[in-house]
Length: 355
Ligand SMILES: Cc1cc2nc3c(=O)[nH]c(=O)nc-3n(C[C@H](O)[C@H](O)[C@H](O)COP(=O)(O)OP(=O)(O)OC[C@H]3O[C@@H](n4cnc5c(N)ncnc54)[C@H](O)[C@@H]3O)c2cc1C
Image 1 (tube, rainbow, N blue to C red):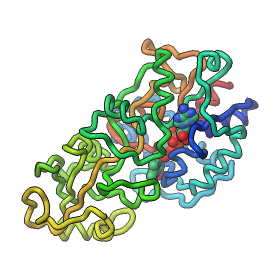
Image 2 (image 1 turned 180 degrees about the vertical axis):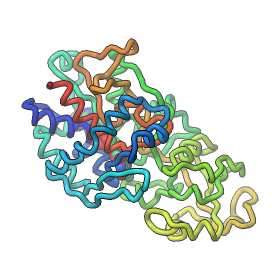
Image 3 (image 1 turned 45 degrees about the vertical axis):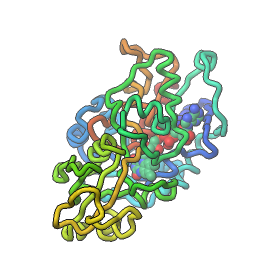
Image 4 (image 1 turned 120 degrees about the vertical axis):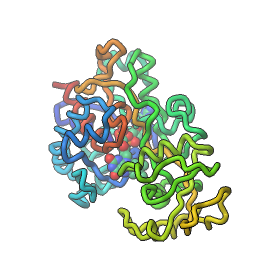
């Protein structure tokens, strides 16, 4: 998303950008997403929810998002809903196929090929790195996020840290939150992109949560609204797995896409508590085996509020910008909309480079 936004804005400003896409189609994870581009209702809430994030970048995303959403609509991106369904946040839900079409049309020259990234390219002009993070690169995930076992990827598989490698090879600094990620606890089975939403088990806050050894490793009363803290903790358990144990009361709770009972009924890894490898609490009537899956990274390149990639000494690297998930440290300690960060940082990169 971020690269297309940067290119579309650069064209409006009179430049002739080229978007290189290494996948077989444009749109990246944006196309696979639920399409909700959102922010917290107040800046204080953003700071409270993501306390370790870079305040200048949070301010940028918060202040610019509403206008940026209007800009997206002005390109013809189709809106499905003007609500997020979450009292803490506000935003707009787009049809992601229509959003991708609108952005590709506006970006102009979008080539399905990997760019030849060398110093000559950099010297010849401006590069905006927007490769979507490093979640699909097993080595980087193991080194920086350190899950107990490799995580399944719940995102477009082309985001393998190319932007991060390119910039760090040239002296770029890394942000906070390198060991954090956005993801979901999924039913513990192999899946493809059609199951990214359907297999997500987002009701850990109503369950008792155990690992394979029978340790209750997370107090469900403390799970955050996004459940990211639980997902990250699950990634550090044996097999990066957990068991959600539910009693009758928990099954009657409502979540975004229905009741917990309805979701559990569709979970392919539900089982009888008596079948577990440990003694379950007596109230539990059903158990679901989940495994942590990664959607995108939270740490990444350090940038300033003009989207310039920074070196360790805080100075910008000449002609090098980053946007989207390649930018790290915006939501450290919590969760913020990846689509919003991609949109705002993409626009910002184009504007800083060209004005
Ligand atoms: C199931 C699901 C639901 C989601 N729902 C939401 C939601 O409702 N709201 C929200 O805010 N976020 C959501 N997200 C997250 C959101 O999709 C991402 O945060 C967002 O797409 C990030 O934008 P980006 O531009 O950084 O990366 P992407 O949109 O993934 O784009 C990066 C692009 O770079 C390409 N690329 C990688 N390496 C190279 C290279 N070397 N050369 C050329 N191209 C390269 C990739 O192929 C990809 O097309 C969801 C994600 C998923 C998977």
